[in-house]
Amino acid sequence: MTDAPLAADVPATPPPGPIADVPAKPRGVKRQKRERRGAQVASSYVLFCTAYQKANASDLAGLSFGDRSRACQAAWKALATEERARFSDQSRDMRAEKAALNPANAREKKPPSAYILFSVQERKRIVAECPTLTLGEVSKQCGQVWRQMTAEQRQAWGQPVLVDAAATSTQREE
Image (cartoon, rainbow, N blue to C red; front, top):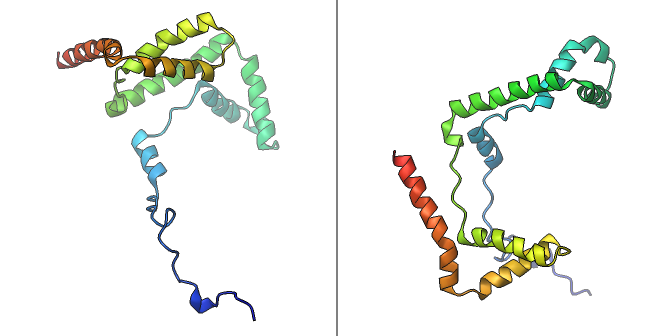
């Protein structure tokens, strides 16, 4: 006789644990974000490809999607700078129209933290001393120096942030 558990011995629900306690993610979160953000504005290349495919529909009719894309890419590369500028201007105008329609999407940038201000300067110093270090190694050294600083030294790096935040708030009120 085997010691395997019988079906009646196995619980119907899994025991509570880290996986069972995780709440289910609500459905449609990405769609909600996309709806808040609105439709994205086409780039100059996308606008060109749309116009190119409409103008050359009969020539591209028998081609696969990949072949049509390659033909469009070749035409884009052969396009004169002035023509590219026309599509770039059109894309820029579309972005401006979108921003004007929904100013809530045009958020103000928050001021950089004290650590960010410090790390910009510290990275320059570290890279000047050791130009062969990788980005990760520079970041580690920057973090080590920051952790070794006293609260007063860190506070000094935070002062420009407070000044900038005060200046920004007075500009908004005007």
